[in-house]
Amino acid sequence: MPQSTDLTLDLIVSHEAWSDLKKLEALIKQAANAACASASKLRGVNGPFEVAINLSNDEQVKALNHQFRGKDKASNVLSFPFKNEFPELLEGPEPLGDIILALETITLEAKNEDKLLGHHIAHLVVHGILHLFDYSHEELSEAGEMEELERQILASLQIPSPYHDD
Image (cartoon, rainbow, N blue to C red; front, side, top):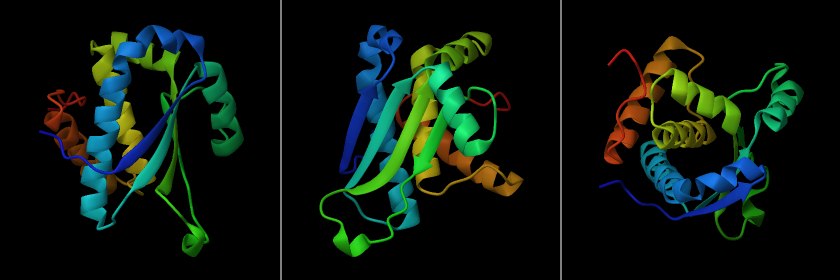
């Protein structure tokens, strides 16, 4: 059974194509909660936490990717950690940041990689949450640690490893 944590999740549907996927809302919430519980425990930080997940499209994600990362293409997921410079003023849940998902890219990847769409979305939510907890995959050692944690969290949700090297 996945761990639970005190997470306030703001799910924002900013592209109408996601409305057809309303049944995935529970899975997205489960994935976010499991990732937040695992990462906060490993990082030794306590909640409650708040995360916004924006269900978007390639066009919006491409614009954000260009603006903030200098990349002129869509990405499956973007994470924007919130850096609170005034924690003493914080009341209520600690805002971790925002995650943006690009539906067209995610759908194409799931099809090309022969993955269930829901499983792929759950993986990207977990991946995004881990970035909000300062996990990275830029260095090989960091990537291995992050991928192993993703596998563990997804396994707790009965979702197979998303990596082909397993």
